Length: 135
Image (cartoon, rainbow, N blue to C red; front, side, top):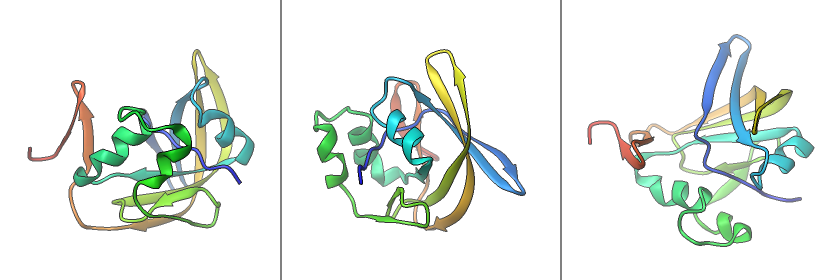
């Protein structure tokens, strides 16, 4: 019954068959506990024109945590985790393993389903700024 989210800086594909990916979350992040308790997460791959969403979930725009989901349109897939409508891709995952590593937890998720949207190029964060391919 609680929605939480963050802008992830460390995400990686693990395997294609069966599909698994990982996300590294700081143990002090507001989303850490909810991911652990729910045993699920949705990885939303943002488009270049969704920088405002990335800034909001990174805490860069001064919005209160409880108001983060007031930007964009959200739905849920089979895990129940929030999926951003209009993202380039939504990877709906259940957590199959957690690995504590220093200040972070590596959440390994089995991908239950994928929803894609082919409109736009991906948003990238590099050298302290948001950018995109071909900019």
